[in-house]
Length: 93
Image 1: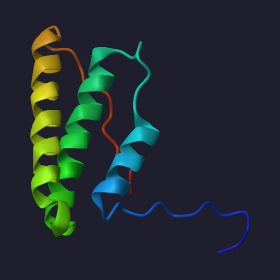
Image 2 (image 1 turned 180 degrees about the vertical axis):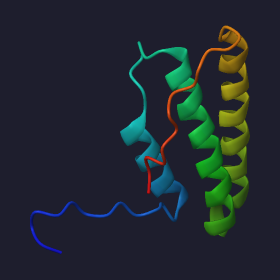
Image 3 (image 1 turned 180 degrees about the horizontal axis):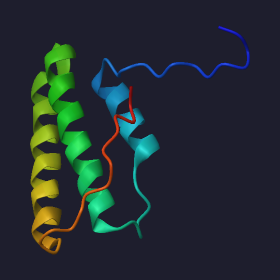
Image 4 (image 1 turned 45 degrees about the vertical axis):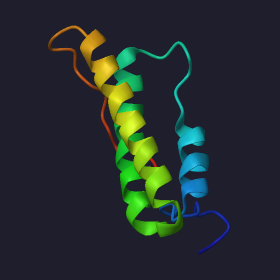
């Protein structure tokens, strides 16, 4: 790798790393609901993955996965029917 090449992002391996990664991609308060929906869906998926990797924080990670999933459902219920979701590219890898 040369100095001009960007560093390849690494998948978080611990609950702390997941928290940091999600904080970096957190949406602005004024962001559209569809962007918040995508953020919470991604957060739920990441925390569920971390629960299987960081076994010392398994139950805490599952709690956060469930919390983010519930928040996504709340937001989804507020969106008008047929509202397109933003492209959910994997921003953490």
